[in-house]
Image (tube, rainbow, N blue to C red):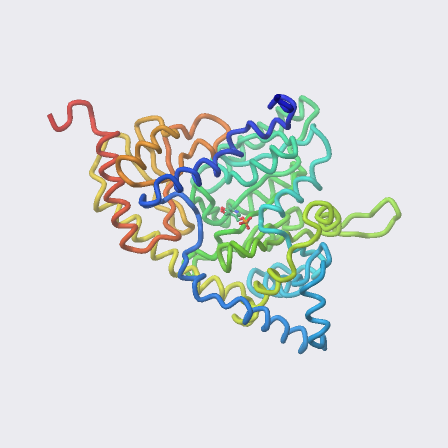
Length: 434
Ligand SMILES: Cc1ncc(COP(=O)(O)O)c(C=O)c1O
């Protein structure tokens, strides 16, 4: 007996965005010998020597030293439910103040279950009803597209130029929606080495976007997951740190800097509001209220681990980022060199040359779909991510994404040799080799 039909369930369940990650995991499981350029996972070298209890102990010592907590009180704090807003907000607020020039009170920080939860909560709070639309640049991180789908929020794509969103197109979209009585409520952007495009917004583009947001009265959701991969001396101020940053909710993650398995991220939401009772509150207070009905609180134990890792580096996100960033820049350099070395000139095969982040995008002359990925895995032993899932339009149909973050140098070289063999087969001109 069929109890439930798909048509009785939420529409997001049939959205390709929701099945994209599951499909990649499934292919990786079926082809365990394949070298995978698919996941944007951190390198295991960072994780294998991680002594969790030492980090928890470090946080306990910090609580004893700064708040006078005895061992019993520390245990209660870590073993019980915790405040929805988080336990390590002061450490994160101090770190973003010192390292990113973002000066907000501890109360403006909400510690979340990864950046993913921060996105979900931020969208839920900001989007009032169906007339509110989310703008993204295309291609765009699937996490925000998926969160929007779950919440029935309509998403519009704005084309991306070399230095960030096309602001003329943003204005055209705003005007078109306004004529229908709708508004762009917020725009999601990742100004530093975006996933998957690798784009970095230069300072002028950041200022121009903030000015456009102000003119159009839209909020910005800034995701800074990959800012730590910038080469030393090339870092740019985040949108949140620039004049006009009060329109920005910044979303951060410790997944790439520390441990993805800890699932710790944060939202910085210092926007002030007056409630119905006349009391002043911050958007972060509302995010925490929503969170109390989603995940209740972020695991105190996981927060303690992340706090310990941060404290070990003197409480500095920049110091953590320097340690981690070097390996990713090395890997990206190796990937680009291997592509230059092993991939012969082939018609309509091109790739970008990002300066940071985890990803390279590659254009192919053929449709890049799940069938092609199967062929690549089964016959050539190499995996990658089809780019279509990062697009709302069909513009990504002939593109794939290569991630280099968790591979070793030999795997990168070997994987690109395999990729080159695959490309020779799918992209060689008709009649080549005859
Ligand atoms: C752009 C972007 N934001 C955030 C994240 C991390 O999210 P989380 O903290 O939920 O693991 C990722 C991970 O792939 C990402 O690519």
